[in-house]
Image (cartoon, rainbow over all chains, first blue to last red; front, top):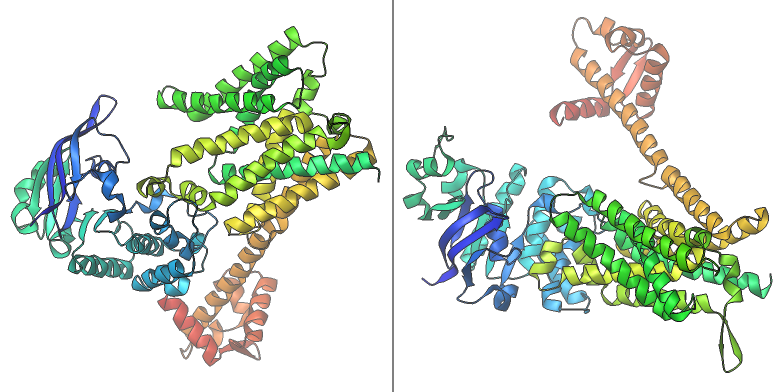
Length: 244
Length: 370
C-alpha cells in the first residue's frame, strides 16, 4: 500500500527548544490513525507542520509523494474547536461553505450549487435543521459537527483532525466515529489527535505514539502496547485497559 | 440649508462611512486598538508629505501616512515576536513614539501653517468647504470630499471584492492559509486601508476621533445582528446618521462638529447597549426575569408532585405553607401560584393546590431533564 503521508527527519522548534525532534512517519493510504501523546507532545504541531502552517527547522514532508503546496486541495483540516471565535457573526451554513472556498478560488462567491453541497454535508453530520442558526448558539458537540461538515465538503483525500472528540456529548461522539469509518470506507486517509486511551483500539486501526519524538507507529494491535505507552507517557499511565 | 452646510455634512458622512467599513473587520479581528495606534502613527507620514507638497489634501499625504501606518503594524508585530513585550505594550510604545516624532516635526518646522496640534487632534470639519478642487477654472467642490470619497470607494471595493476571503481570514485564519489564500497579505492590505482611511479622515476629524468612528458604529451594529453583511450595512447607516445629526447638534450648540459626531456615536452605542433586541441589557434582564419565574414555577410543581397523594399532602400543598418550605416571601409565592394557574399547571382548591395533568407532566419532565 502506498503512503499517503511521509515525514522524514522532521524537527520543529520554537526558538531553541524542540517541539518535535527528528520525526519519521509513514501514514499508509486509507489508514484511520490516532495521534496519541501527553500534553505538549507536539500533536497539534505535527498536524500544522504537515499543513505547512508552521515552518519546520529541518526535515521533509511529502503528501502522495509531493510537497503540500501542490496537493493542498486534497488535504482537509479540522482545527481544534477553541481555535476560532464562535461569536463571529455568521451562520452554520456559512461556516460549512467556507470549506468550499478553496475550490472557488479568489473573488468568486459561493452559489446555489455550493449551498446544496454544504447542506448535504450538514445532513451527514445530523445538523441540517440547524443550518441557519447563528454559530454562537451551538453546543460544543454541534460546533464540532459543523467543523466536520466543513471538512467533508472539501472532499479531500486526507483529513487531519485536531481533537474532534474533545469534550463532545455521546451522540456527537457516535456521529463522528461513524463518519470516520465512512471516510475510511471511501478510501480516505484520516489522522486524528485523540486523548482517550481507552477508546483507541475500538475506534482506530493505526496509532502514532508521540512525545516530542516518535515513540512508535503502526497497527494498533502491534504498537499500542503497555511498554510503548510507558515510553510515551513516562510513569504516568495508571490504567491501560484495551492495550494489548 | 446652505451649500456649505450641505458640503460639510457630505464630507462628514463620507468620512464616517469610510471609517466604518474597515472598522468592522478591525472589531471582529479584536484589533480595535490598532486603529488608535495607526491613526496616531500616520502623523509623521502626513507631516513629511506636507513638507514635500505644501498641501494638506494631496494624495502624497495619503501614501506617506499609509506607509507610516503600515510601519506601525510591522513594528508592533516584530516587537511581539521577540516575546519580550506583549502586544498591548508594543502598540502603546510604537504609536506614541511615532506620534511624538510627528508633533516635534510640526512644532519645529511648521509652526506657522494650518497644520497645528489642535487640528491634528480634533480636525476641523467646518473648514472643509474652503479648500476646493478646481480644474480648468471649474469648482468641483471641497477637496476633502474627493480624498475621503476615493479612500471610501477603495475600502468598499476591497471589501466587496474580497468579502469571502476577509470573512474566512477573520474567522479562521488557519483554514484560510491551508486553502491557499494568503491571510497575511489580506491582513496587511486591510491595515493599509485602515491607514489610508485614517489619513483621509484625519484632516476632517483629527487623530483621536478617527478611532471612535472606526470602532463605534461597528460595535453598535454588532449588537443588532448576527450576520456579517448586515453588520456592515448597519455600521454604514449608523455612521451616516451620526455624521448628519452630529453636524446639526454642533450647529445648535456652536460646538466642534467632529466632537459632536463622536458624541452621537457614543450615544448610539449607549442606547443600543440597553435596548438591542437580543443582546441588549434590557433583553438580557427580561430573559433572566422570565427564567426566574419559570424556575420558580418548576420548583412549585415539583414540590406539589412529590407530596401529591401522600398523607401530608393536605398540609404541604397549601399556599401559606410555601413560605416556610420553599423560603418564599408571601407576595412572591402568591405571584408564582397565580402565574402557574394562568398557565393551567395547577388548580387552587380553596387554600390547597392541586396539579393539573399538564402540571404533572411539566414536573416529571423537569425532574428527568435537569
